[in-house]
Length: 191
Image 1 (cartoon, rainbow, N blue to C red):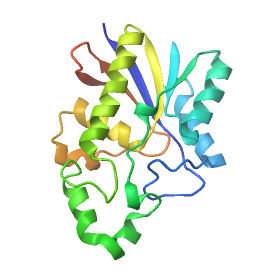
Image 2 (image 1 turned 180 degrees about the vertical axis):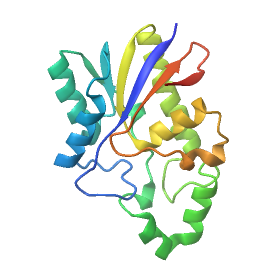
Image 3 (image 1 turned 90 degrees about the vertical axis):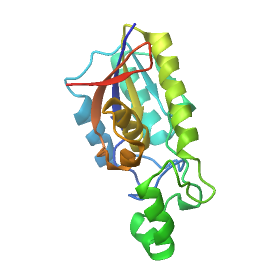
Image 4 (image 1 turned 45 degrees about the horizontal axis):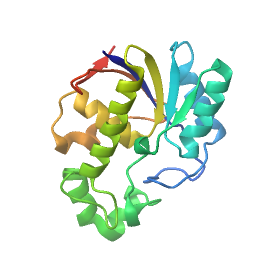
């Protein structure tokens, strides 16, 4: 059976832009508002699943309490770990590590940030989490509160993009996309 999966990216965080990865910074007031605006007049959902990082989990827990829906935290659905690049902006990396950053942008599957998580391992982890959701909630609509990298991965697969185009997928703070997850692991973007 099909899982209807709405995927919401967290809003703006206190420590600002850059590669947040596994850093656990909180949402700003603007970040909360971005997420509230995204879910207004959406749903209804049967349950919520979230990354355990607070920029996702606190909103999911508040929304779940408001809607009286269960919330499950799944560490497999958190952001790519960027290793030594965590917390650094692309502009700062261009000054100190431009060649490596360029290789990562050109093909994130072929280049791993220093001491970071390989995108192949990230992909395996995220897709395993999505498959567990499909098995647990087939036939239902689930809201997943997660990160830009998770959303880029899922949208790139749904759109049939080559792996080199993963980072070309645009996902702003508070963005919400709808996907169908089929039993054969096929992802389809919904209107």
